[in-house]
Amino acid sequence: MKLDAHLHVWPSPSAYDYAPGKEPPADLAENSTFQALLQQCERAGVHGALIVQPINLMYDHVYVAEALRAHPGRFVGCCLADPSVGGGGAAALGDLLVPRGPFRAVRFNPGLWPKGERMTNEAGKAMFALAGERGALVGFMCFQGLHLHVEDIKDLCAEFPETRVLMDHFGFTKGVEDPNWPALLSLAEFPQVSVKASAHFRVGKEGERWPYASTGPQLRGLLDHFGPDRVVWGSDFPYVETQCGYERASLIAENCGAALSVLEAEAVMGGNLARMFPGAWS
Image 1: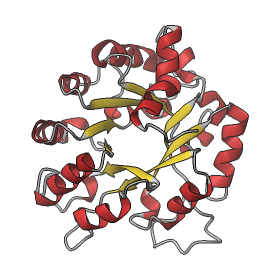
Image 2: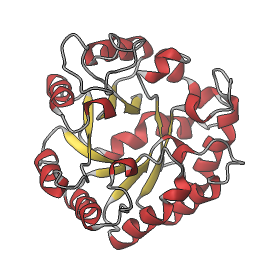
Image 3: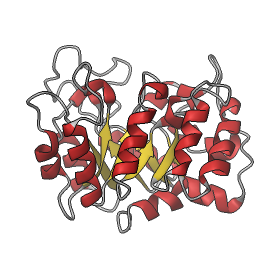
Image 4: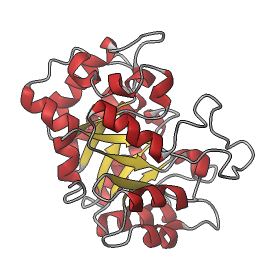
């Protein structure tokens, strides 16, 4: 069973009133619906996926929830944490992470925290703890650099060891020579932390094309440091559509030069994600 650990969907601009500045990229605007995703999955032989709430929808989870409910046994949802002043916080998160509900993970985007606040503030700790209590995973998107947030992640993991974590997109490290690469590997000391080997096109060398061979040593390094049961593949659809395309993205892990064994490939390409979300995919 091939499973995609990281992708997004959003409605056509003709069917949704996007907030100013949150409109989807023009070249992806009409090809990023969950119906379009299903077509791509069929072509690539991908059985199911973890849909991550897109930033252009912010805290409006209606569309993603519609996709999840329309296709039970195919999709699982990752909602977006709201740490803003006067925002929903743990109360809103609790309404999304309900027992047997479609959302079973939550994304922490440190860029959404109030200026000067850390993810270890009161709101952050409350949401992180709640995720653990509900059996949900927390995904960290460290787009501005892992060095800015790794200590927060470590502090949260140490205080709440029952909360499982998924680091997005290789922790946004670009190659094994990246100064943040050791910081990512240091998270292996926390048994609850796993890593998405996702969006290879974002972390490969500039101008590099499929199969993004420079990411091979990274994937191999993750497997060696975290173990083969704590790494999952993700495409970053629909953004990957303007890069190598979804079907090719589903073949990257076996072709980027990481020299995966048969068992490692089965684990990374779906087995691990299925174990993280038991019963999610029929």
